Amino acid sequence: MTVAKERLTGGAFLLLLLAILSLSATLAQAQTAASAAQVQQRAKAVTQVVLGILSYARWPSEPVPLRLCLVGPTEYADDLIKGNVQNSGQPLQVRRLLADDAQVAQACDALYIGKLDGAQRQRLFQSISGRPVLSISEADDPCTVGSLFCLRIGDEQVAFEVNLDSVARSGVRIHPSVLQLSRRRGSQP
Image (cartoon, rainbow, N blue to C red; front, side, top):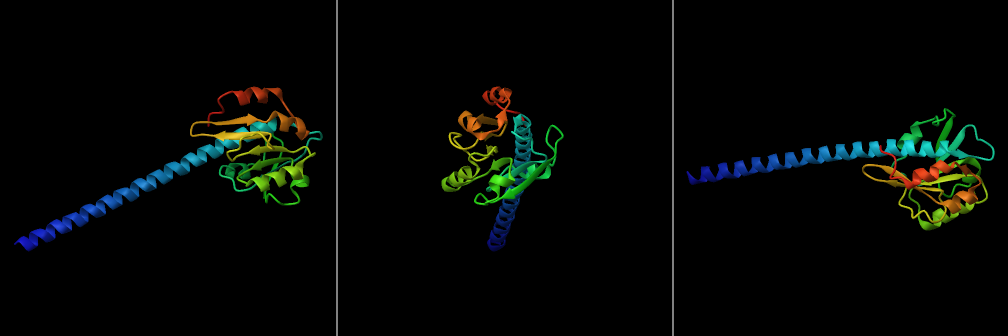
């Protein structure tokens, strides 16, 4: 009789273990779904901020369509790829290019820059030097060299910093109200 009792206890333990593993898997799936939803929400907020920045920019010769190039691995650019119209209603052409692509300087009016190492960033900014190209960095960038705008993407908001030196050198005019927006807490997604 003791043998049968031990088997029941062992069987009950096995059932309990399976239930715990099943619950853990369900919780992990729920967290993954929540994370995916959060990433999607951030991507939509980033798209709104980027399109807003582009709407406040003026090139020496207005590009139609505006050519936005995504450079480097990006985390929140999915919605930018889907969109083909700016906030103003003007056409927007979006495509991905490698950081070292020789076409970047001639083929892009604006850059959305993902994660690049220091050497890649330096070569990229050298390639667009002297050309009217607006650049926005997604990755955690100190915003001191190169990019005109640096996004600060958080759980609750997307904010941005403006590099005034880079703006002055870019040849792209930015409306002064953007400077005021950069000082605020950011755009709520």
